[in-house]
Image (cartoon, rainbow, N blue to C red; front, side):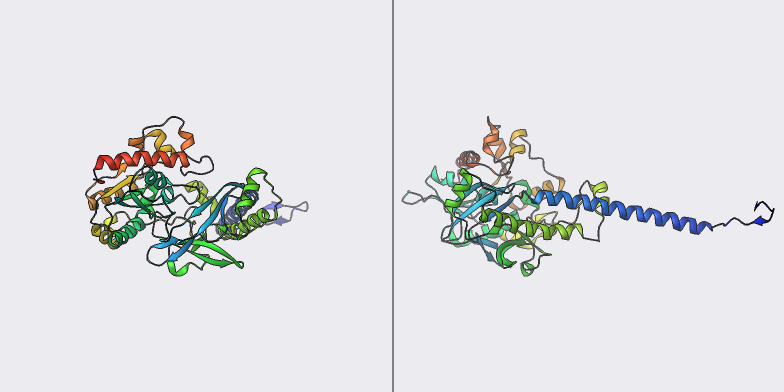
Length: 402
């Protein structure tokens, strides 16, 4: 009790303990929500600033076509201009020639009865945004008849699916399956071209029946028929950020990126701040769709389709692990535990161990020139040629070409 001047007693208001607890919890909740909203606002500004100087791929026509069984093939018989855009400007461009079978065209053999070789892999082998992948140099410097069935984005699951079918069809003397360590954990994926905002747009997804659904399919580039050889050459010689075509390409990519950005930042199902604190990644568990879907497999022996395909291959098969810059520089593949488990199951199924190409290549001098870093992890033309030289040595040592 307290007393006023006239000594009348005045009662102090007392709140029950549960109300104090509820008020404290409410204040904490308001603080957490405010922190989450503030952090999302910061991410929004960061992504918006990044999108003003975007990185993406641009083409003058579709590079690929849907294939229900094998994901996709390159557009048969087409000549396609591909551009790599970095920070909103043309970084590199090339004209690609696709052969009649939907593969990267390789130099023909001049031998009267050449040894037939089928090659399977991902973008480190098909290299669709560079003039040549390593199979070009491998074919150029040998008498082999080379068929390059590599597909950008492929994982080992789809490489073996395609290898089994093409081996039955073409009856080669031997095949080469060249993969990077990440390919061990890639899921099967399908590509097609869909209409987005009235424009043809290449997309990829892990479910072939939902490629038209932006919640399940990811855009992989921008297509514009106005993109020509002359325009690319002019942009490389004298970059012009105000060029109408470049402005249009950037605007289309920014529109797609903005849509994807809103999906992430307006997602109420996860806390981006908690993801950051717990996983050092605000988008942890949210990158669906993605350009390279991942498989939950812990062993290839659990995938009946893969097991059936690999057991059906009845010609010699050379398994090769291609190195990226870090692996070549350190002479270490740095696999995760799951990659090692999958690699072991691959060895069990094939009865042979893959060849780690960095062991054959050693650590070359001036290693930086072998890759497109810092803009791209893929091999340069010099890197592809170095791969081809080392792979040719492995083929000779294996005796497969005899």
